[in-house]
Length: 461
Image (cartoon, rainbow, N blue to C red; front, side, top):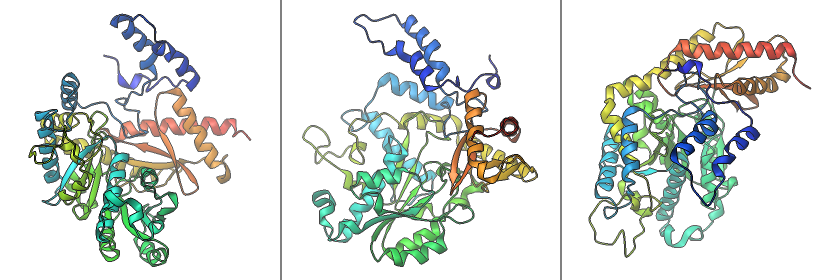
C-alpha cells in the first residue's frame, strides 16, 4: 500500500491545467463509452486534482474521507436511493431519521422537548434558524409570519440579527435570503480570545436598539477562523433581557462537547433556541450531513407545508420533510447511525480528543519558537500563526504570508490555509481527524523552510 505521507495531497495544478484535464469528461456525445474507459479517464484526469483528505498533511479545511462505519451506511443509502421526506416515500428511512434525531438530542443533552432535522449544510441550517427566529418574533407581535411576511411588522427595516465579527459568512447569506439585507446583520468585536466580547456587547445593545429590533443573537461554538467558543450562558442571559432568540452555530465545534473533559467549554448549549451541527466535519460522515436542532419541537411546525399527495392532514406518520425544505432529501441519517454504532461513543470521544490534544501540544512547543508568532490560544483544533523573519518588515508580513501559503499549496505535499484576524493575515492549521503533534510539526517545519527560502529571494514589489 502506498504511504499516505509520500503522496501528493492534490496535483498543485493551476485552474487552467485542471480545466483542460477535465474537458474529456464533459465531452458529451451521442454514443456512450464503456465503464472501463470511463474509469480510466477519471483516474487519469480527475483523481489527481481531488484533495486527499486522508493525507496527514491535509490541515487546511474541515474535511475528511468517510469513516468506515459511515461508508457502510453511505453505500446502502446510495444503493437504495431513498428519499426520506415522508413515510409514504420511505417508511424505514423516515422512521430512522426521526429516531436518530431523538437519540442525538439525548446524546448532546439538549432539552427533553427538543427536536431536529437533517439539512444539506450548516449554511442552510443557519438560514432556517434565522427564519424560525423571525417567525417566532412575529408570533410575539401577534401575527403569522408565514401568511403576512415582513410586511406584518410595523417597522420591518428595524429587524436585526446580532453576532460577532468572527461569525460565519452564512449569516450574511441568511439575512439576504430573508429579505433583511446586510445592514441588518449587526456585529460585535471579539475579546482577546476571539470570543464575542460580552462586556462590549452589553454596552452596545442599548445604542443599537435605538434604530434596531434585535430578534436574534447568534453565538458560535467553534468559529471558522480560530475555533473560538462564545460564552453561550452569558449570551442566553442577554437574550432573555432583550427578548431575542438565541441561535448557536455549532457546525464545527458542537461535536467536541461530547468529550467529557471539553464539555464545560460548551456550557449553555441546552439553553439555546436552536443549534446547528455538521456531522460531515470531524465525524467523517459523507457530505451532505448537517442538522438543525430546536429547543422546542413545536417550533418546527412553522416549516410545515401540506399537500394532497404527500404530508396529508391527519396522517400520524413520520414526515421529516415537514420540518425543513427541500421535499426531496437524501438518506443522511443512515451513514451517521452506522458510524456511531460501528465506533461506539468511547471511540468517537477518542477520535474527537486526538486533534485537540495535538494542537494544544504544538501550541506549547511553538511558544518557545522565536520564528513563530502565535495568533490564538486554541480551544478546538485550529491554530493560527505567523512566520517571522528578520528580513521581512511588519508592512510586508501580509504579502509574505500569502506567498508562503501559495508556495506550500502549489507543491501539494502539505495543505494549510490562511485567514485574516482584523488586518493581520495569519496562516492556519485545522486538525480535524485523529493525528499527533509530531505530524503537525512536520507541516510547521515545512512552512518555516518555505518561509526562509521566500525571504532570501525577497518579496516582489
